[in-house]
Image (cartoon, rainbow, N blue to C red; front, side, top):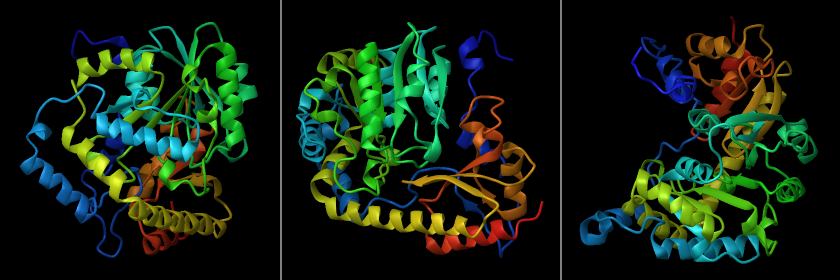
Length: 392
């Protein structure tokens, strides 16, 4: 063991996706049964050609693209987000409410650094997004699990019972990772009211909002004239524009909080990736129809996943939406062992529910997450064929 080592870091779980990839070491897959990787929720295809050309043009011809920029992001991108978010959600969002980050994970770590210190508490619905849990663990912030109800929808009444004088925030992800659930507008409103009543923050991560199956605004939180006193909104450009490697995310929050966020960002990265921001701005201005096409394709795959589990009656589909299906498997093996067995027995790489639930959770031992965004409907058909004929 290396010494000295932060006790909080030592107690933080290993990155789940990286751990799952190690299960592939030394494994040879049959030619007629190649690996189907449904472990990670990230596009693997390149951005559309026009967007790549815009990035190339900036790299070649824009000297500022290679320099430090404003810590909170390019003014034009912040303004565009404010304009489009106001149109999408209603209410009034200004450029000074927006900050750009190196991906949405950094957005979470930045805002959380303004909210909580070691010994404080943050409520996370379960199953949770593991990187949220990992950051809290690294900072010795106590994570309070909130079990979700039917459809993997959390309940504000249940959350109210968990609030203590040390509670600093409630974190919601909608559409949800890992569960796929799209939280009803009334659910988000109830959590907003709860957070306001207790003087804590409500963080709403909407990384997958572009793939919500509903039309119109998914909630009305921004129409509250005092939304910025409670709400912190997070977003990622990685999924909608296939910019995962460029690392571009966003925070929408009170300008006073962003002044504190600026301290964190300046220390950690100085400024967001310039080419990534240029790409995000170009995408927002030019790729609206293309994104709608991407959404339509993801919804087709979602329907294929839902239909597939109807033909596997021993499995239980707990949630399905955005990039994810979250299911309960029928086997006696705990999910961490079951997921490893799927690699060798079915050439399937999934993530077990133990990565999304508290240690020792009986629910986690029965659950797995399937990130289906990178397999087309033919691949989904093959996925279910392998599950149907699985022998352990």
